[in-house]
Image (cartoon, each protein chain N blue to C red):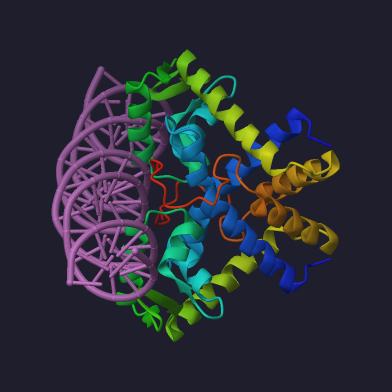
Length: 156
Length: 156
DNA sequence: CCGTACGAGTTGCATTTTGCAACCACGACG
DNA sequence: CGTCGTGGTTGCAAAATGCAACTCGTACGG
């Protein structure tokens, strides 16, 4: 069950290749929405929106970075910030209408890209791909296991 | 055969999640070797080494960026540059001994990470994962098809 | 009702990464 | 040789990011 070292090595290689290209590619697909912006918008498109702090945890970015990116997104009119009714320190974030549009557009392009790259695969295979990716993503990192809090671990 | 839109959407989502975290994670795993540096070293670890221009194509980064990263790697003593015997414009790159060591170390850590995340998978599944990733990576992008040259397409 | 501790964001400052355009050096070819 | 194309480098500017210090609320214990 535990995998063959060679295979694991291969997985590493492919994951690196994938990640190396993905951002660049994403920028090509939707220049008007940087990769990080896209991620942020996606998260806050969740019904109910998210809090800024959530984004810090979700992205692993420093809260100052998040703060600034959000400011930029707001300036660009892509997000709306409102205060949490029960706690004025907290801000609730959600994409603006235009934000949703851009997000949808970006998604369409990305889906097109994926469709293209999986052209010729059986739908069985595509589904397996998705499933395995999801499982991989859902797994915990050996280190960051214990509910990665804000705990001052030096960022990148 | 051509995949269900919902599934494709799922694949996009997972790919984004994967890519978003991967670099950050990589930096945590090997702080002494930035993600890009790691990629570059990996490429030039190929027997025979690579030319700087190859790295431009392989990474999609601007050649100026590559140039500088290489300069930094050299300053750090991780790569050796020699001139191509037949063409003095070209430089052949290969990791130094120390470069290889760091690369091996980083690889070990990454493999450990992957092993951990695929804990509990059957070796069959891990292998399928690798295969599908490889196929996905090998596929061409719809746009960048015609041998993506240096052609001034606005970067990100 | 204060005063202190804490939590969520923001801002000043420095560093890193990256793109683009101009430029330099070398090789190919008429 | 003179011109041109190719492989790299460098000047310059912009974007992304981290860290530490700071602001403004909230929560609690007297």
